Image 1 (cartoon, rainbow, N blue to C red):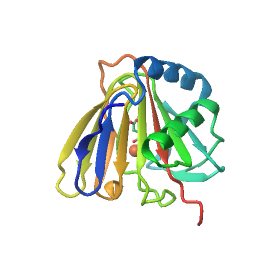
Image 2 (cartoon, rainbow, N blue to C red):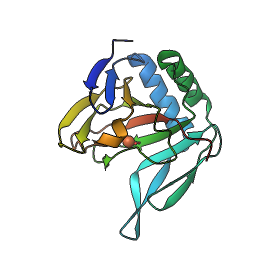
Image 3 (cartoon, rainbow, N blue to C red):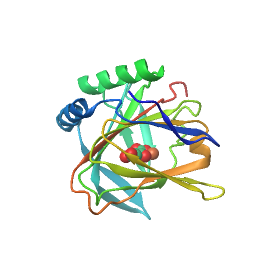
Length: 197
Ligand SMILES: O=C(O)CCC(=O)C(=O)O
Ligand SMILES: [Fe+2]
């Protein structure tokens, strides 16, 4: 693993590490996750209409946590084998034990994720979010809510992006479209769900 690069260092912090998983390992993980994850289209409610996204997602957790967003409720599935071993590796590398994971599948560069912060009340605000990338390389952007400063990072396959608190209170992020990208990308965001409510 290479040394982490500091992307943001105010109002929270972001570090980026290339090759947490080297090329061959990252490709192997991509194949396994393609098969293993229970990919489902996402339902997003916008202005009272339900929109089915092309991007697919799946949500995993230690317990069947319920996660409400955009007018829908999701129940976490138990961690499958490959995802479990990736979580073990993250614990070993970062010292953080993540009890949930949201997986995203972007079939090509036409699929994206718009500006948002991951500040849902059910997520532990004192815990970082770990984001892993496999498959196609995509740009990732941050925008400060106050002064609108932006930062851009290219997310390479096998890389690890760590977002530390209180980043989600001050910055938004997005995954823009990249029309030229033909290949699929898998993203895993490991999070800490609050158990006591
Ligand atoms: O695909 C990505 O890199 C980001 C996904 C994301 O921001 C999220 O799931 O909250
Ligand atoms: Fe996010």
